[in-house]
Image (cartoon, rainbow, N blue to C red; front, side, top):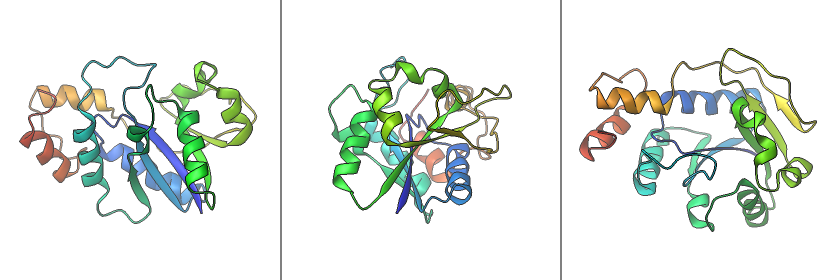
Length: 188
């Protein structure tokens, strides 16, 4: 199977994440997309990051009814800090029958040369790059492919701010995820 790996902190996971995963699965010839929950990204601040267990639970709730989109906790089981090359090495060894395709946002493409062992990733894996805003950039590396994908005018940062302001997020959060956030008093 051809598996797309869509990593993120999913803090929290929202409908834009899931819609993008569905779209890429259908449009890029992927058999499945695994949404890989990342622990603290070494290139980002840890401030405001919900506990791994909460983020994983929300990811599972958001993907319960999905056919070809699966939650993955693989990065929570690997040494930290979490590096994509380790995830790819581990999954390739654990599932040699699959071909893994890395899915990254355009913002990550622009700083890809700062990723640990980024040349090894480029040499061994196809990388799909989805847009992250109105401004478009050319692919930086030969093994990266820009994909046309819908833009979702939403971010987890914005969701967290809306939660603090007690705004209605029915349009952007799965009801089960919204209930989980309320029950566990997250992002207040």
